[in-house]
Image 1 (cartoon, rainbow, N blue to C red):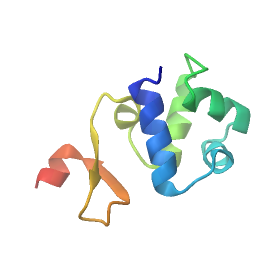
Image 2 (image 1 turned 60 degrees about the vertical axis):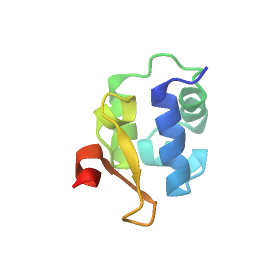
Image 3 (image 1 turned 45 degrees about the vertical axis):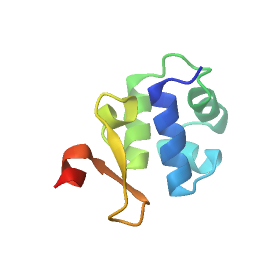
Image 4 (image 1 turned 30 degrees about the horizontal axis):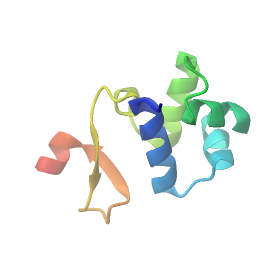
Length: 89
């Protein structure tokens, strides 16, 4: 069963219109390793990998791991994600 981290990862990849290969390349990891993470087959990616993923998608580690909510924004055409406080403003 997918956890919040893997759900967020998949959502961000799809919003960007990236393939698994593109997401892996942007994060500096192999396609197989990225797939294992997104499909919840790799239980504990390293902190370096999580940092790389967050940078690739342009979100904080808190947002990527589900510690801080990321909400879809209609203000920017539904293609961006912003912190909940920013959307409410």
